[in-house]
Length: 152
Image (cartoon, rainbow, N blue to C red; front, side):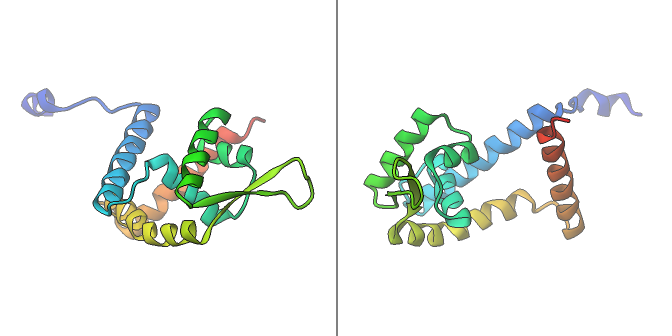
């Protein structure tokens, strides 16, 4: 190997750092898309709307787990999104003590508007990959996720 080219080579990042850097860039790109659309949402709020749109109503604790927030942070995010009219807290059908979080019509409309932003960011993130590589990356990440979740 040419020693001149080695001087410019950077060491490969470990998997944890690389995944963190990729996530940070996706967050940055998505927040830039939101700003370009004049949408007053942060990435975490976008994720909350996305989870509710894709998975339907759920408890605040289920939602917090799905977007990796603690209870206090989730309450603040829900309060802000509720004030904006994007979601509501409704009594649970089977448990009167519990609440379910669901999108309002305005929240669903906002999600529909954001779907294109989401697709643009994800497409840009994968633009250097062909279709087979995209599928392979998805498969690898799913397998890593399953391995981390499998405690056996």
